[in-house]
Length: 311
Image (cartoon, rainbow, N blue to C red; front, side, top):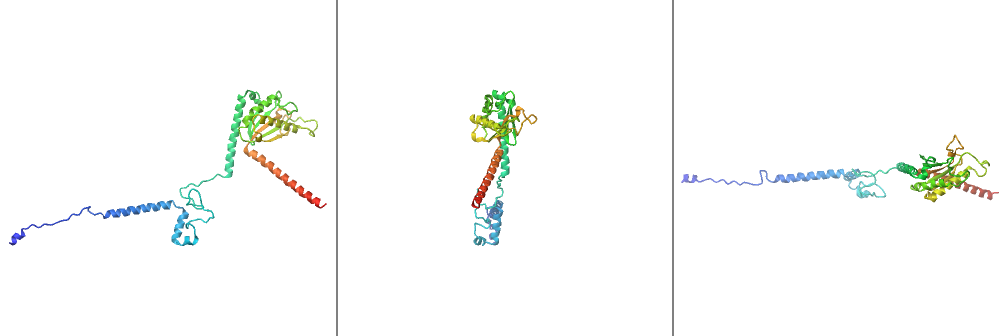
């Protein structure tokens, strides 16, 4: 009986567990690692996009959390200013610029003035080329091309119309333009009007003087009258009147041909398309003279009143 009992088979039951050799615990550890890594990169991004003042404010908060409640303001990094910072970034305070943001640099007044003068000079040079082309293509002007002298000066574009012994612009001692001379100024008037620049007109004569030794009608009167006659023709044929800044008669004070004071070249009319800077300078100088005269007149009036009170 005992042998039959020992012949019974022994059954060993083994339970196999699924899910891999290490179970699912590694997934939890990996998820924690990814979360920490994302938080780290988020922290780096925040530190990189935050101003130094804000970082200093955060550091101060950890040092003294009660500062905001004691000092007031939206945060410890706020700048002390009566006016709040504005602009495209409302997080900025006075003097703060975010990293990576380009700060706008405005040109100085001097740089703007130099740039404006360069543009003005370019316009004057373009007008010079335009006048040269007009003289070459216009049959009337081409006949007088040797009497038309055009160049750039510190004051602007200068156009000199000089006399010729054969073809004078004015009869001797007269302020009335010859018909062919009128055609010259009538032709260039619309061209001069293309720019907004002001215009100066100056008359000149030769050194031959009147017999009254300048005590009566003189070369100054004659040159001023001739300059004004040119002004009238220019305005009648397209030049705006308010662009004429000054009309001057210089007489024989500034000779074109100094070696020959009686030369016909000295009898001329000079038209200057003034640069903006030159026109401004002329106006300011005249205003300064006017202010001085006004002050002097006021002082004379006060002095006269004092003398009247105390004879």
